[in-house]
Amino acid sequence: MKNNIIIFGYGLGISRALAYRFGQEGYIVGLVARNKEKLEEQVLELQLANIDAHFFCSDLSKTEEIPKLIHEIKNQFGEIKNIHWNAFHDIEGDLLTINPSDLTKSFHLRVSSYIATVQACLNDLKNNQGSILSTNGVFALDLNEIDMIAQEYAALSIAVASQYKTTNLLAHSLKNLQVYIGQVIVNGFVEGTSGAENKLYTIAPEAVADQFWELHQQKDRTTVLCGRALKAA
Image 1 (tube, rainbow, N blue to C red):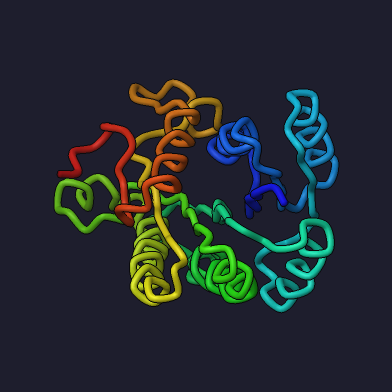
Image 2 (image 1 turned 90 degrees about the vertical axis):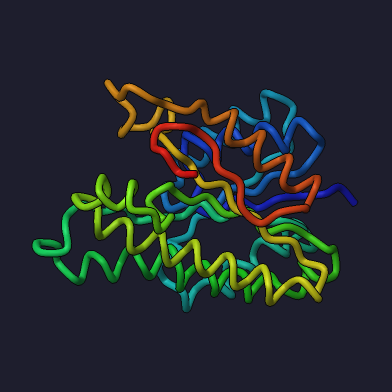
C-alpha cells in the first residue's frame, strides 16, 4: 500500500506546498480543514497534478470530535502513516490588553488539539514507524533578541512556545516507539499568505516544505530553523 500523509489544518501556504512535495514523491495526501468548498478546490488542483488527494471537513478545535475524524480518515486510507500538524488560531496583542479567552483558543488548538490528534493516530504511527511533522514560528524561541520584537505579539508567542515545548516532549516520549517527530521553525513571513504583504523578508512555502521532507527522510533531529528574518542563533 502507498505511503500517505494527513495534513491537519490545510491552507494555501506551507501545507499546500507540503502536499505537493509529498504528493510528487508518490504519497497519498489527506487534507483536513473546516471549509468544504476550499478543500474541494484544492483536492481538484492536486489531482490535476496527478497527486492522489482526499479531503475531510473538521473543526479541529473540537477535540471531542477528533476520534471520529480519525476513524473517517482510516476508512479512506487504511492506516495513517504520517501526519503534518499545521492547525493554528493566531492572535495579536500584548499581555496587558489581550482577552484571555482569545489566548485560550490559540493555546487549545496549538497544544490540546495537537496532542489529541497524536493520541488518536498513535497506533497507526507506531505500526508504520511514521512521522509527525509540526509547523511552528520563530516567536517560540526563548531569546532576548526575539522577545524584544515579540512583545506586541506576546499572546501568539506564548501559544507557539507551548507548541514548541509540546513537540520536544513528544519527541522524547515517542523515541522508543519508533515514531519520529520533527518541527520546522519558520523565521519570517510566508509568501502568498495574508501576513506577508509588503514585508521586507519572506520565505517561499516550498522552502519550508523541502525542510519538512528532509526531516522526514533523515529523522536525525527534532527542530530546524527556516529563514533569517530575526537573529535566532
